[in-house]
Amino acid sequence: MTSISSPTKIPAARFIATTLSATTAYGEMLLKDIPAEQFAHMPHEMMNHPAFCVGHLSIYPDRVIELLGRPDLVKRRDGYAELFSAGVACVDDAGRYPNKDELVTYYLDRYRVAEHVLSDVADEVLSGDNPAEGPFKEMLPTIGSVANFLLNNHHMAHLGQISAWRRAVGLKGVM
Image (cartoon, rainbow, N blue to C red; front, side, top):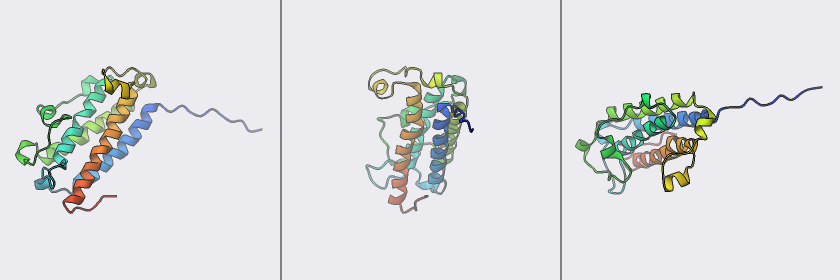
């Protein structure tokens, strides 16, 4: 007689981390061959350029890292919130933004640190209440839903903007 064993319980954070790893790898592929001198170019007035998208994305991992209980790993960059927060306009002015190498290095570092933090997060932490107020809390009531959204859904939405930007400036797709 064959017995069926119980499946091993996989921490929910591992699912978020796995998709985050794939998302960050996709971001790295999208960015690596963009010429530095084009990084803050807007081919259309309504199209965010990679410098803005990457800078914007870079401010969110630290918010998640704090929610996951690791404020000691937060490394915010001065001026990034003023340049890249939601609601700030993207402008066609390369001098306004940090250079490509700084932006990409910071972006990759922050998402990799978030992925590392997720490797040690208990389900109880992810089940905790989102401390935000208003519509953000209504939409994402738990820390886990915030982490998944900011590290994956939000992340991919802005990487999609970079993918479209690549086509608009004549660069090939990466997948």
